[in-house]
Length: 191
Image 1 (cartoon, rainbow, N blue to C red):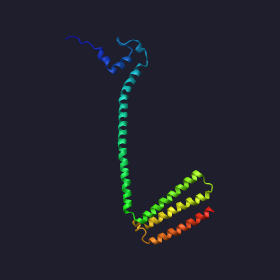
Image 2: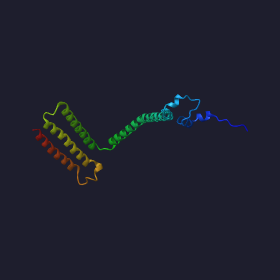
Image 3: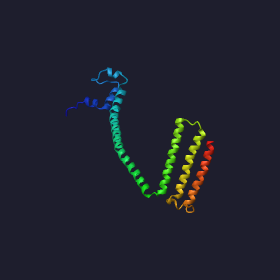
């Protein structure tokens, strides 16, 4: 049997063999001597594999972010349509099932809210020189809103179980009496 010849090219081709050759004192004859005199050579070979492994990871992260963005952009119109469907369903149910008296009270409450917002915006823009006048007007709108909400709750047919002992006429009389007291104090507060 002929003797086997060692093949140094296979040993030099593996990365673990390269690291062991750089760390050992003996140098391979095919490598130049200047590359072994540097102490940073082992660290540069250790950073090369991490750089090559981070590139695919970075590409995967970019792809996942792109897919997430595409999913969100496709979901946005659907969620907007869902929100429109929900609001339209609520509005249709309100128009169909709410009594006319409750709708009238809701309209008055919306008017009071608009008046209160306009008073506050006017106070911010034009100033609040007669501050007690602003407080009286704003308190009147907020107080009237609360009294109207109370009247709405008491006269709503859906709340009939909670207010068995209170008739609609009694609830309206309480509303009128509370409104008179509220406006009496507001007029006196203006001076």
